[in-house]
Image (tube, helix red, strand yellow):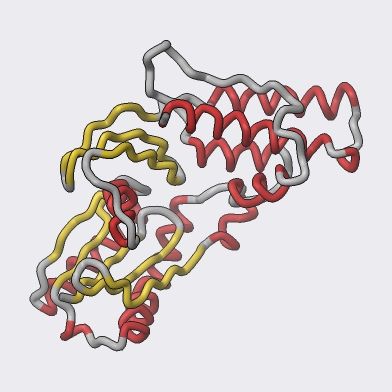
Length: 258
């Protein structure tokens, strides 16, 4: 059974062909990083227009790489949420039209469920139940996975997601976009214990997350750094800020998960 998967939930136009639920025959991703880089984050309108331009060639490339024609498909799966509304509509509308014309079954997918179940594409898979931490762009959530389709939300972000915090802090530090890779690269040469940024653990038994306070703490620290101490970035202060911020995020994520 050959399934075409389509995802336009944010700023990547993606299509893949999966056979028998396990074999990934192709996986094509058109990144919009260069487009959104000047803005320090994803601009929804620009993302939607870019999906319109790229979705058809991306799907065609996925079919070509898999060595298949549209007639060889047995179904189509498409992300229906969560994500940017305009971007989601591009993928959903195209998938519905394709399914209608070729008389194929269409399945709407929650892409967070897709993240959780992607582990079953690996050779070693977990047994139920297991804990799943999804840290994806605008989502930071902790689930108890009892079975396929059976999930209990244990905790989620109450404000900024971890990915959003990385993007915003990268912008504050003038490192560019996307924030995750550039902060990780910068932090590699810094001391994660240099600055005691706050950890928001919330109530004693809470499994929810909050990163807006950490983002504000970094912003205030940088303001003092530039306007007060006038530390030369060449002396390693920038690397220490990045490393200490990253350490604070990972500390909360890992402790809540454990």
